[in-house]
Amino acid sequence: MPHSRQAPLSIDFAIVGGSIAGLACAYSLASAGHRVRVFEKFTGRPTNSAGIRVPPNLDRPLREWGLGAKLDFHAHKTARTDCFHLEDNSHQGFVLWHSDILHESGGVFCTMRWDALYDMLFELATSAGATVTYGARTVGLAPGTEKDQRPTLAFADGSTYTADVVVGADGVNSTIRGLVTENVGPRAGSFEPEAMTAYSVLLKTKELIVDNEQDYRKVLFESAVDTSVWTSDKRWIMAFPIARGEEYSVTLYCHDEYASKETGGPDGLDYVPTSSLDYTGFHPIAIRSFSLGTNAMRVSYRNILVEDWVDPSSRILLVGDAAHPSLPLSIHGQSMAVEDAIALGTLFSRLMRRDQIAQLLDGFQEIRYERCKFVHFSELATVRNVSLPEGEEREIRDINLRRASLERNDETEDEATLLSQWEAIGSVFGHSARDAADEWWVKWGTLDQRTSVFDAVKLGMGMQVQEVTQSS
Ligand SMILES: Cc1cc2nc3c(=O)[nH]c(=O)nc-3n(C[C@H](O)[C@H](O)[C@H](O)COP(=O)(O)OP(=O)(O)OC[C@H]3O[C@@H](n4cnc5c(N)ncnc54)[C@H](O)[C@@H]3O)c2cc1C
Image (cartoon, rainbow, N blue to C red; front, side, top):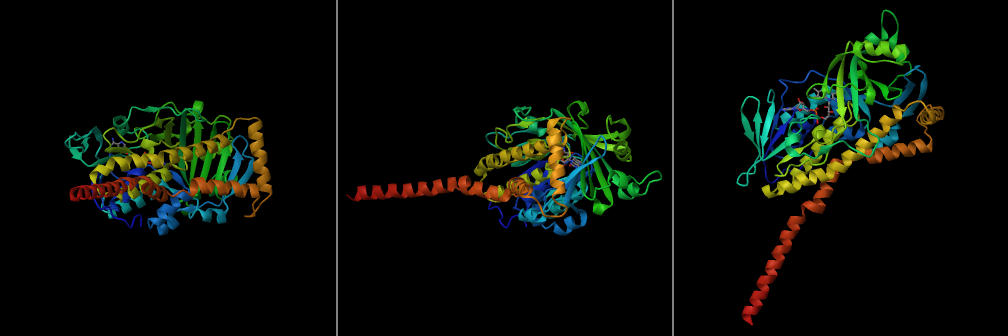
């Protein structure tokens, strides 16, 4: 269960966007005792889906939310990642995900369909009492007044809804963001492509194994027992099994000059024919395999940094991709959205008075901002590594990978690999959003209670002094 704690004061939350962040927040807040309504512009359950990677920091909280059996059914555990050159399909080496070390994080690394996660969160949110309204496109949002601080949402059909707090979970092209802050600009000072695009196809494993002309799986996925990456200059392909091994999710990532100029659909995603993509320099096997999917889901990314997640009236909050846009079809898009939900639910399970709302929303940004930034930079480091141009740095990467692979063909790892995995697990995968929120509460949230006690003591002392004065 997410919280054994029920908030002493229940308030109304309106969540704009009913995808991963919106549904996860709806569950976390509803199970802390709040009244939650989700407004989603899609007219029903979304039909677009590619594969997702579920890192331990997503797997663990989902299991804590009681989704273990469903995860075991839908997810494919990742034990190793093989690397190949995209130009000639030669094998570079592999990385083993050491099970003992992953175990320390309390979760596993796995892969599954995005819509399987969506369905799980939808069921959780609605069974906790949240309501989801489809076909509700938010077109406006009016902050509250001094007299009534509650913000009011306006929908495309002319209707409105007023809540104590509005949560903008409306994705990378968020409408709510423009109403919260003007402080949005490109992230600077790091390796960060200005634009990136991911194209993803879902292939039936059966079709890969049995093909009229060639056994594609044997060729492209020769060593691809698990997750595989084909690396190249500013482009790479990642493939992994999903849906109990019945499907393969294959994604082509491009940045800068190879990225599409269009921004994709209004949600940052749409579909394009695979025949329209630029495969210059790819091995023919990679081109044929990718083209087995006729249309690819396209997700685009622009380098955006959102400085303020809470509006000046302290009643509107951004979460998920609206607050911290993730790289397209990245490892951590979903995990950061669910961590946001846990932190928000944990904080608001402490709510006692309406005048605490501002403090809790600020606390949310304080807890989540640096964490999301850190995880984003760790993903960028991986992106950089798999998309290095030809040259010395790429050769060193390949030598290290080959050497590491030769030294182990089972789970007996060299110390350096163990140490680096240990560090990755501790800092990225081992994070607990609930612990972070609880720690913040102990440090800051109880401050006004402590102040009240202190004031009461002072007041008591004052009365004593008065009494003494009077009696003397
Ligand atoms: C249909 C869909 C399929 C996806 N498939 C994958 C996938 O296969 N793999 C992957 O890694 N990532 C996928 N993503 C992206 C992934 O969900 C996010 O990167 C990440 O999980 C963060 O989620 P989010 O909820 O913050 O944003 P998003 O998932 O982008 O959700 C934003 C939601 O807000 C809704 N919305 C936007 N504007 C409004 C408005 N004005 N009024 C009401 N609602 C609004 C959108 O319709 C959407 O449902 C998908 C997203 C969507 C919407």
